[in-house]
Length: 151
Image (cartoon, rainbow, N blue to C red; front, side):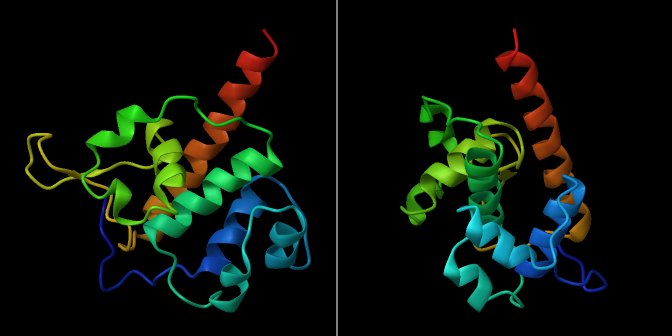
């Protein structure tokens, strides 16, 4: 996956949320209001809607969207996410990051190039291409969870 390049316009929180809803076919005159009403967005998202969306915000929003909007329960064991060296740098974010990482929606960065130092990069920003890939993987997760639930 690519990092944010100078030529790549940073995606704002609002743009990310609008793209997420559009991908899932949700029509709403106000994506932020929709997310707030459905319990998967926070007031911070509305206040900072024009700020670039960071990796920790992407993880939180996708995790809460899966939980509240799609009814997909948390994975019961997040111990596997302990390989992320910065997982607990944000205690509030830890479960969000772990759930999204363990589901394979977002990747870690290997700073040692041998799997020895995995870094989620909580405050990092991703390219729009990468962010759209996370949304695509979220769709896959919803589709796969739905198949498991109906067996």
